[in-house]
Length: 187
Image (cartoon, rainbow, N blue to C red):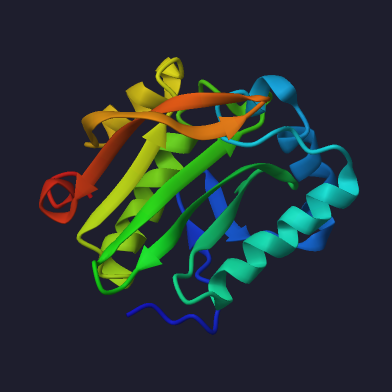
């Protein structure tokens, strides 16, 4: 099983996947405070940098939970600063499953960065957490995220009717999963 005492920093060709720290709160707020970016995320935009700081602490606290998770900050190797995050959370050890979530700053989209980051994170989930299944719930109108999930090997399993609530309304979500046996050929 994964070592929960040390943060599992990862690297890809273009990215550092690192721990999100208090100094990242302004960059996190620029992403999570942006209503356009958050329209598919599953929560309302953050109101201010203090809320972003609390989100940093929430992500950090995931590693101490009974069903823990890890949220990586994404940073270009060539530049300082957070451009997004991704993570595995709701780790159910008994069932050997978890859930993936991710978001990018608008300036970082369309460059294949999240594909690159998620390949490292999904591989870590299968090899270090020893999960058999990774879930993703994606808004039906989030075509970019659906394409990404399918590209990574996720399979759509169905629609979860009005499972989510943000922005003052209920939302359907599409349920996707990636199984270890399907990942072996991609990882």
